[in-house]
Length: 153
Image 1: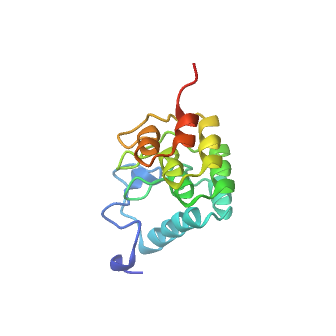
Image 2 (image 1 turned 60 degrees about the horizontal axis):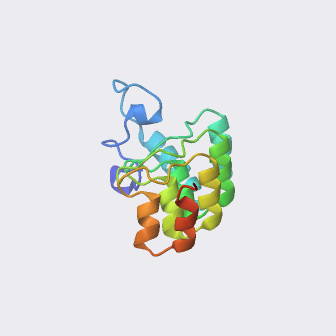
Image 3 (image 1 turned 135 degrees about the horizontal axis):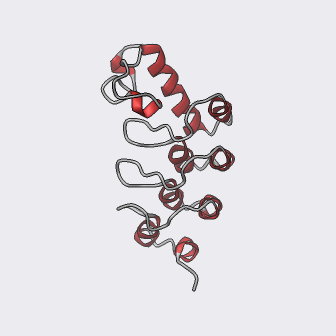
């Protein structure tokens, strides 16, 4: 696999620290990059097989070159079972990507009340990040979701 074909990970952005290594570690091989791309594809596709890789030691909060974690990708794609599995596996529900979006922001953007409720129950902060879930709900006129996101008091 050549660098030109890599969609999510490339040698310039796939730092060893993103995969749990040190910044002084050697660059990733083409095979390693292809494997990582496959893992991110599993998250986008909602494949529960990803959870087995995490059980075997892949970090639950691994992020791609845009800062998107498995949880962010799964939430954006609306994969409820995988989102729940990733949360159970220890994925950080408050991790932000480079656009300062969380998995909760993605679920709100998609209008997915089930995922919004699940992520809130797991401790997701609706006001975290520049493009946070509350602002997203307001911007898209999602009053039902906004009601879920507002603190009760």
